[in-house]
Length: 197
Image (tube, rainbow, N blue to C red):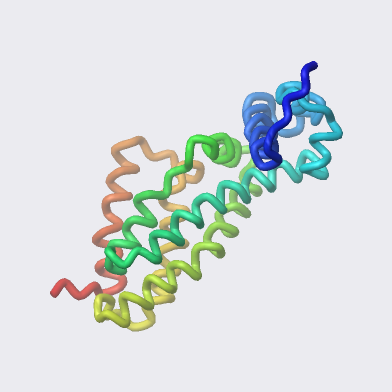
């Protein structure tokens, strides 16, 4: 086997991507570290330079997915061109996985992974709450959100939407899913008493 030297982050991402592909096709339990390294074309020692175990790979894949989403949300929150309502709507409407994260979501959405999936949703919600609060604070300061306790209402909305729009929890067809996603505009307006003036 010819050794190909790669940037450490590139190599780590390659191992993560291949591992998630194998977890999806063969199942987590039926995938060995040997199979992962064979498919990537690296030694087991290289694998263990990046990960302590197969479980560590799974957690790293979830963390990579969340970090990617949080980076995009950070830029959205800091965007001075958008008002608070537009930012909230974008957070919910743009919540689709990147191409390299699709394997993570496909894996999480398998029925056999329901406990892990539930933990993932809670981790994601907890990571998003500070951003949601910052947006709601902006909306309240600018007189856009008139509701009492807008931060708690936005947190409630986040939790509800996280489950309602999760295709691993509900198996809406495409039309049903889009109806629910599009209904969020009105729900945000009503829940946060958006000032339309």
